[in-house]
Length: 346
Image (cartoon, rainbow, N blue to C red):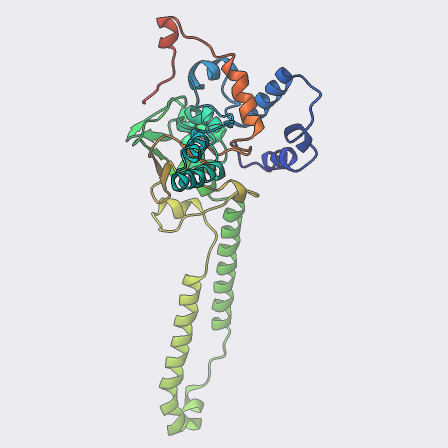
């Protein structure tokens, strides 16, 4: 869960590259238990690898999920057969059309919702809102006190948010909103160039020969005298245009621009970040204030899952993972165990 190029390369290898045969295959020689463990390791390598496996199974694994197996026969099909037997052809035709529509829609990819509790974590929400390069950077922001939860400083990255919670991040802690070292060097070079230009202009002005006033009076005519004000006005206009262009000329960013309250903000994205720049539907970010509102819990519907994942939300990897965890879910039996539960705002 990061914007690093290595992560993008590894995802490509798993999806289309040399390791595709591990995830997308039709024939298996391994046991079912080995396939389930492999699927679990693939999903956990992306979703919550910073969470201990024991803690994940105890606190972040949902108690149950709807059946993710495709049904062999639906009630609509039995209704069609019953109507045909009763010679109700019109009702049988309507039921058959509804059955075809249900088959086209398919089941909702609810298997991916096993990570819905992970997506509620405050550090994951900051990462999904594109305020940090990775979920590890988001955890650093929370632990160092650069995050506000509903207007109050919050330092627990394990907190699970409730619908309506607002998370604010200090702009100074967001790395791609800070000036780069190259920008400071460019600013220093530009200041030096401007100083050299001003010094050259001053030297040129001082080295101009002074004309004799009497000679100029004898050689000047009335037409030249009348043209002097116009030339002076043109020179002043040219000087004004040069000074205005110099003011409007884009300059490199520096820390002083941020402290001076300028409306302009530096924005330096890391390379290969475009595949990861997306906002889930359950978040409402505001980049002007560096804040995000957690609207609701993630959901799924036929053909669509709101859990961001590189794997097929209703594929075999997700199903095998749920089968692995469904047999290894931990039970909480004591009050001392409940006391260690991470903050859950419901």
